[in-house]
Structures are given as structure tokens and as C-alpha cells.
Length: 187
Image (cartoon, rainbow, N blue to C red; front, top):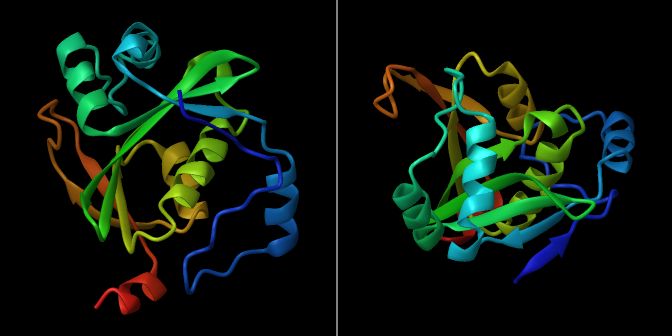
């Protein structure tokens, strides 16, 4: 099982052109929880589904509750379970669309663990893992202001709104993080 410790002082590389209040940012990083990301396998399916079900039933997140769909996601994507003090408190996943583009396809934090920057700590680790990828995108519900604020604070830009994105009748907005220095070196 591959796992990563996130130190409370690690920080993502800010997007070019984004002004960041360094003092606020440094103080925020020092307060992040210590979490572990462990690569999920088919053996983790029950834990993964339990986390997805914990956030099911709201229009702002399309939970993956079908076992076969979840197994397929674990097979095709990089899926991590997020642990805090040995307890699974969330999951995050991404897939490489091309060598130059990654899609973050999910971030779930159990309701009992929300509000403690676990999602931020996990995203920082994922962004560090993807630091050499020129384009990183994701989608979120336009009413999920917590997620939008989180992603914007990490350098993502709000983009296009797409109606009925997952076929659930709900819209999503695309958010993108560009690493211009990677774009210029890849051409």
C-alpha cells in the first residue's frame, strides 16, 4: 500500500499571476491536519463506498454508490483514501487524460471530519504529485461554495458552467489550474 504523510508545513506551488497573502497562507499551512493518503485497491471498496454514501443525497455532489462503478474507478484512476489518526475520513482521485492534462474526479470528506482542512491537505498533496502536469481540471457544483473557495485558494480558475453534467439534472462548473511554465516547456 502506497501512502504519503502530509506535513503541516507543506504548500502547493501557487498559480502564476495569483497574488497570495504570504503571512495568511503560511499560518494556514501550519494549521493543516496531519493526514495520510493510501492508494486504494479493490480490497478497499467497502471503505470507499461507505465514504461516498456519507455524502450521498445532496444535489452538490454525485456520490458513486454503485459497487461496479466504484471498482471501475479504482481500476482506471489514481484513488486515495484519506486517513487521519488511522481512520478513513475521505477519498480523492484523479486520472491522467493525456501526459499534459489531469482530471481530479473526486474529493470526499466524511461529514464528521469536515471543517478541519482535511480536503485542503489532501488537495495540496495531490497538486504536489501533479506539479509537472501543465493542466489540471475538475468539476464541482456551482452551489458548492466551500469547494469553489478551496479550489480558487489553490490557484484554480472558475470556468464554464455545464448543465446536467453527470446526467443527474444538476449543473457543474469546470475549474482549471494551469502551470504556464509547464505549458511553455512541453511545446
